[in-house]
Amino acid sequence: MSDDAKPLKSAIELAMERLRQKDADAGIESRPLTDQQKTAIAEVRNFYEAKLAEIEVLHGSKLRAVLDLAERDTLEQEYRRDRERLSSERDSKVEKIRRG
Image (cartoon, rainbow, N blue to C red; front, side, top):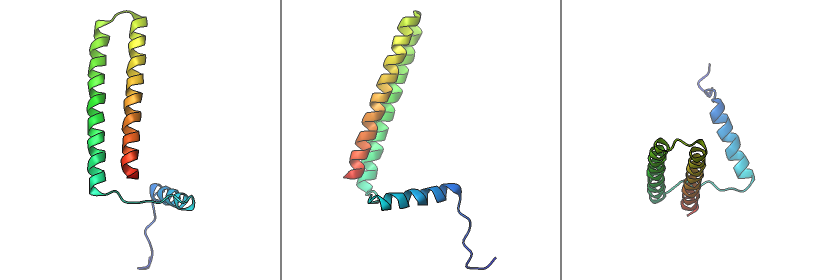
């Protein structure tokens, strides 16, 4: 092997290159995050991680108190809705921070 030979790229590296090229072709600009943005994103993620953990604990305690299958099903649906809502809120706030 010569000194000029480049090491083989992993499938992930190749896929990331293709995605970056696709974004560049579509006119999507890639900017590195500032330290302030990174801190804000970390704070948002930590907040929502805590909220998700809180609703999980509350959900578990509610389930232990309920024996009726229909009521348990209702609790499960509410829990899934709450998780989806919190995850969606988190993702939209992170995206807003990324955009500046």
